[in-house]
Image 1: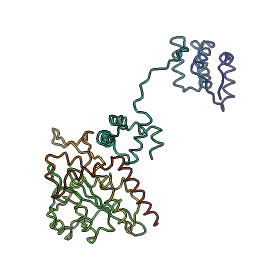
Image 2: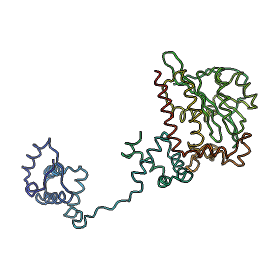
Image 3: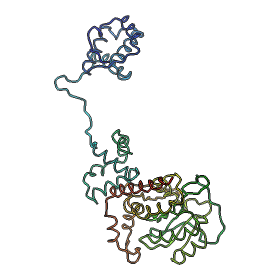
Amino acid sequence: MTITMTNNSAERSLAEIRSFLTGADCLEFKTISQIERNDWMEKVLFHHNYRKCRRTDKGIIRQYILKITGLSRAHANRLIGEYLHKCQIRKMNRQTGAKRNCFGRIYKEADIKLLAVADNAHGRLSGPAMLEIFRRECEVFGKTEYASLMNISISHLYRLRTDDGYKRDALTFEKTNPTKVPIGERRRPEPNGKPGYLCVDSVHQGDRDGSKGIYHINITDAVTQFEFVGSVEAISEKFIKKILAELLEQFPFMIIEFHSDNGSEYINRIVAELLNKLLIKQTKSRPRHCNDNGLAETKNGSIIRKYIGYAYIGKKHASTVNNFYQNVFNEYLNYHRPCGFAEIKTNAKGKEIKKYPKENYQTPYEKFKSLPNAEQYLKPGITFADLDKIAMTKSDIEYAKYMQEEKCKMFKIINSNY
């Protein structure tokens, strides 16, 4: 209910105020303007000589002011305190209409919308990864609209994600049983800054009515984080040999070592023969050293679970999911999705401390190219000129949108068969 501040309402007696408050419990009021409100409050406080009122009477007057003005208790107390200190309440200049000073707004609605679009495309990556994407969009792909977001601080980027405009636009595993098989050497990967040391792990896509879902095979290079993912109906020897051969073939550099946990899907005669044929050394994790295959475990959550989820996918859809991986998703992971690369320092106690500065966020392909004399690691017949064509076909956000569209098509095919 909107009221006009009149002298009559400001000069009511305490008895009239008590009667008014009793009958106005179900009503809400608001003032027309700040100037009118402050004038009215001055008149009320002056009329009742608020400074010399008893404590109970002051409480009644405060309740009256709160009811009529609609102010919060803290705001009303500040204005009353100002009156008691200066005998008046400061008002906005009537002639100039001057307002309080405030900081200029750097990031406009258009920037927030660009952030929402980028987050939708990439699946809302971490702040440092998004900053690297905005830098590449602006500097590599010439998208000048991202120039403002390129220089945003990480904390402010997270703050923009709480904006109402952004919100409108933004859209148990069973442990494997140990098997004593004399295949592979028990030790952690030691790449020493060289690519070609791969970590592999499997991810199961759930059970339903006693039927097993598909399995994802996730292979990641320990140095560059080059990653290739495949999907199979089961992790039996029949399927594993074929998918491993396909995934290993896709890496652009020579492969030296293949590291896995002690699961029987990798520690078996079939995989050992395949790796021996390709002249790749096989290693496996040590007991009670869970970090030996930590990178692959991390990628399971940040890649497979993030983009595919946990819902059951039947075996008959393994080829559909695998086609999406080979034709779209793997290219997105390696050429358009930045990863964090740790700086490792040892403190005085000999403990390794890992930090991820924002300048260390790069795509796996950028990381590979940045290695000293990187050409020496390329497979015969592959050049960086060929790989550059793949990386520059689309910008990061454009390819992320394309990936999301293809993923939606894949899930529509899957859901249509249930």
